[in-house]
Length: 188
Ligand SMILES: C[S@@+](CC[C@H](N)C(=O)[O-])C[C@H]1O[C@@H](n2cnc3c(N)ncnc32)[C@H](O)[C@@H]1O
Image (cartoon, rainbow, N blue to C red; front, side, top):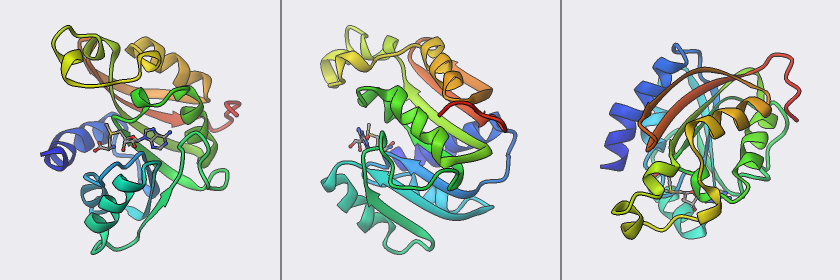
């Protein structure tokens, strides 16, 4: 189900927001069990896909899921300190990760550091309105200090040296955003 939503909803929407910029060398931050790896790896224009995940159990599931995929590599890493060189990637995706990360702004700074100038950051996030919802908050655990609204997310993204290309949101619950790293970024 997660993979299906990512393939048919999240990824096409994010790509539209970025006006289908070329993908090139691509990273996924916080890949979890690897649901997005197959749909991402099959996108036209991806030369290779590197995925980073902090949790060893999820990483092992992602490895199983991606075993048959070409040009996909996985690494255990905290996305606030990504083991990659500056300007190593053309595109970065993250699906529903940053609202789990304390100090999520640091992860956006890292995304800016490892993206080439002109590279695109694609984010799909769950917002404060969903996390604080009287019903949903009983069903799902989220760190209490990592909540944000669309405006907070955009402000932190811009401070990290990005220009927002487009957003879509469902009220104050879910956000999709594509942002270009400024060609003369001062974000890190
Ligand atoms: C809600 S899951 C989303 C997983 C995947 N992106 C998806 O959409 O199926 C959040 C993921 O973020 C990972 N995560 C949380 N904090 C992280 C960090 N600091 N560095 C890397 N991954 C992290 C978790 O281990 C988990 O796999």
